Length: 211
Image (cartoon, rainbow, N blue to C red):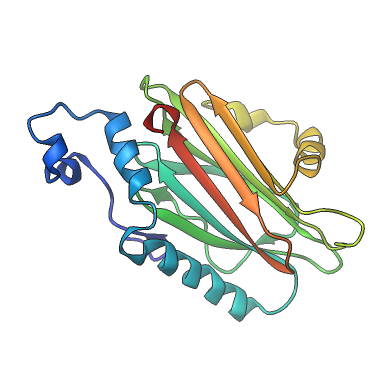
């Protein structure tokens, strides 16, 4: 398992060990539902938070965002691309694959006299077996007295962000609030961000039928 993901993958084998799924045909939605139920199981959420806090502590006191994303889609999701509006990825890379039932963690940092504002796209499948791109974005501004922190999430068909209008997207990211959610084509995404100099962003991707 990669060092920047936390928790064991929740697969068909995981569900078959549970009484309620024995002698049952297991679906992607079933795997997603169990992953969501086990979001904080076995201290995986605690371990993920400790990891990104360690990255922050090593980076220092400048503005940054400790980013955590949880996958409860029922299948693995894979990194597609990222975009920096202000700042850049910290020392640790983005998780390449986040298995169903895992947290992924990374640190996004500010530049001189800028905030930490960026986004990342992961690709997975919905309950209809269609590939989708999930966008998670965070905004921790440099001037916190004049600008608010925001979170933004969106879900689109595969490839949507390969030709995105990032200038327009920047305005959209800045216009939301500290929480944001999106439901699209059987998928649901949630995002939330804090307001400290080193804020925490938490994103959730899930099969909407699993709730």
